[in-house]
Amino acid sequence: MRGADAVFCDIGCGQGRPLLAVMEAAPCLGGVVGFDIDRNVLRVADVALNKFQSLAWTGERYVQRGENGERGGDPSPPAHLMHADLEQLPNLGRATHAYCFCFGMPPTVLKHLFRVCAHSPDLRFLVLVYKRAAGDHAWDVVGRLEDAGVNCHHFERADGKSELQMPGGTVPRGCCVWMSEHAREVLRAAAGDVGSDGGQCGGLELASGAGGAGGGGAPPFSSYETSGIDLIKNAIPVDASTVAAIQQSNFDERGINGDPTRQQTKSGQRGWCKRLAKQQADVLRSRGHLRTSGTYGGREKEVVRMRGLLSLVTEGYDETAVEPQEGDQIDHTDESVEVLQRMADEDKPLSTMYAIQDGTRLRIKPLDGDWVTIWLKPGDLLVFRTDVCHHGMGYACENYRVHAYVYPPGYKPGPSSLHPCGQ
Image (cartoon, rainbow, N blue to C red; front, side, top):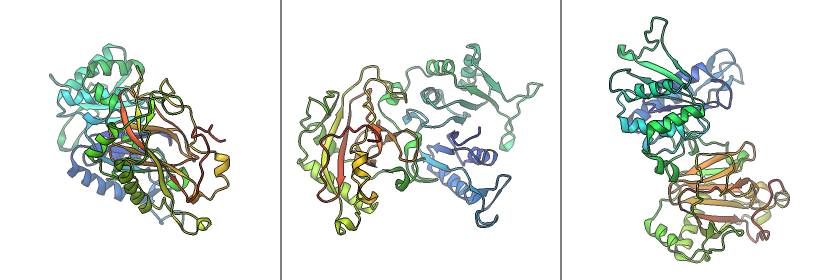
């Protein structure tokens, strides 16, 4: 496990010991992510990770920052913790390597584990630690993988004894599974249909949050100043009456840009719209997104053209895939890049997407990075510059959300919101 593209995930990370071990052993990887359903153990892990991240890598060893002259070495790998329920996750986001200590996991939870791993497109290797005893469902599934010819490496010595040793003298068994497509088929079969609908139509994306260790997950992009993207977690609490009003609104069935599967409300003057626009403005102001340059004499940007969006079902759509498929928009920017090049960065218009239901997501390319899929939970607000390339995605279930623009005073947008990327 090497390289900036490698992301390690500990499924049920507890106090974070495997995360720390991986960070120490592989200082140049892209990051580590741990999640657990127990907030108390996450607090312990948070303390340990914060201590480790005060260190820097010199190329030979970790040192305290500043110990090696002014540079002090390179930062330790980014580490993030997340409070999440395995049964709610559709996949493991950008994780390439995953680890799970399966002791004590009931079969129903293990089935969700296998489902999540099978639907994680970037996952290359999965390490399972188990008892190898009668009735151990994880051991049974490892046997099924081997019977199917899947490449599995067991952590055993030549005499058949386990190489693993846990605190307290426990001697578990372990196996590393190469996540080929054949392995995914076996895991999907082992999972049965448990959670398959939930994974396709909602849930969380592990690598889509914002914040550091102890926060809401690892953001798949850099700061707003360099990426042009800001994901604000839990920005505006979702109000049931607002959701109901949006769903009962009059949607234009002709569709957006002629696409009838992607519709928007005809009016932006409804009561829910005005309330939500004010709430968004308050959040954006607190993040500095309403500021403008001296060109506008200190006047703020405004939240305008707010609409409810509805994506209808695209039959056969695979929400775990990253390759373009039927139901996806073309890659585009919301404004002409050539026009916006003449504006100061703080004056450039913004787009916002506010999630009111699980499964809301957008495929987007940060200004300084590669394409990522950002998953939103209800209440999350995604903000991005209108010169950032992106495309809407199809949905396996109906999805309602809210879109708006943020314009500097007097700004007149172009006639189209579908501009080829880079033009």
